[in-house]
Image 1: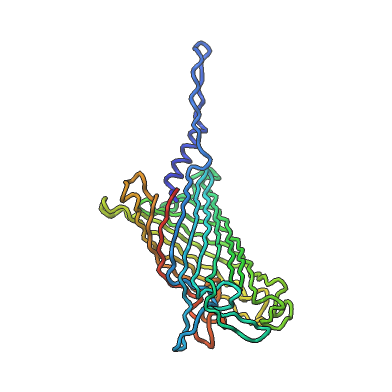
Image 2: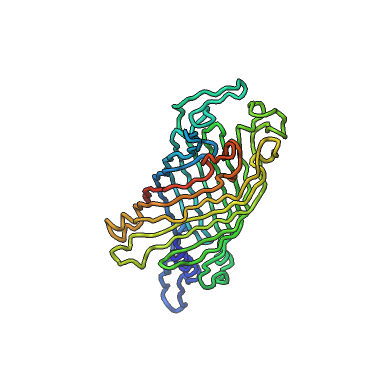
Length: 368
C-alpha cells in the first residue's frame, strides 16, 4: 500500500472541505464561485490478476509411501488469483480470491488419499492412480480503520510509527477433496503501521482468531469410527475450534539504493502465527482420535519482484507487469501438529511430510 498517496489525498480532502467557495462584497459585482474540488471516495484503487506456481505444495494427509519407508507429501499447485486493494478517507480494504489446482498426489473426491479410494464400511481400499488433482477456492479479506483519520489527529504517529488502526477480516475456503473443508474464520484486533526507507512499510497486527470448518471423516455414519454422536463423530461434520490469538505481519520496500538503471526491483514478504485452537477434531476430544493442535506459522519471508513494465516502458507504467520469485514456508498447516496427528502428519511415528510446506513460489502479476 502507499501511505504517501494516502496522506496526500487525505490532506487534499481536508483542504477542500475548509476552502471557501468564494465571496462578494455588496458594492462589487458578484464574484464567480471557485470550483469545489471533487475528491473521489476511493483515492487509491488497485486491481491485479496473478498466475503463479508452487513447486512443492502440500495438503495434510495426502501422501505416498516411498520404497525406503519414507513418505512423499508434496504436490505442485497452479494458482490463479484476483487481488483488490483500495484506500479511502478512514482506512484501507484488501481482498484476494485464489484458485489452487493441485497435481494428482493431492486427490479430489472420492479419493481419500493419494490415488486411493477407501471404503471403511466394506473394509477395503482400491488403487485409482488417475484420481484428479484437487481444486481449492480460497478468499481473504482485511479492512483497517486508521485512528489518525478517525480522530483527525497525528497522535498515533511517532518516529517510524505511521499509524495505528483497528483491523477486521475474514477467510473462507472450499476444496473438493473427500475431507471437503469449508473453512470460515474471523479476525479482529489492531494494526501498527511503520514506515520503511524507499517508500516502504512494515505492518504488524495482533489479532483475535476464531475458526469453524468441516471434516467429512468425522461424519456420523461414514464408517471411519464408532458412531457415538458428540463423542466420536459429528452429525454434520462441522468442527468448531476455540478462539485463539494471531499475529499477522507484512512488509514492502523498493530497492532504491540500487543504481537508477536498476531501480526496478523490490522486496516484500509476510509472516503469520496462529495459536493453538483445541483438539484437531474440536468440539470432539481424544475419543475421536484427534490430537491437540499446534501453533501454525504461515509465511513468505521474501519475495523479489522485477517491475517488468517499468523496465521496458518506463516509470509511467510502473508495476503494471510484475515478475516475481519467492520462498514459501507453512509449518503445522491448518494447525495440525506436524510431529503428531497420526494418519495425517505421521504414520507409525514417521512424518508424512504433508503438514509442512517448504517451496519455491513464482509468478507473474498484471495490474488493470
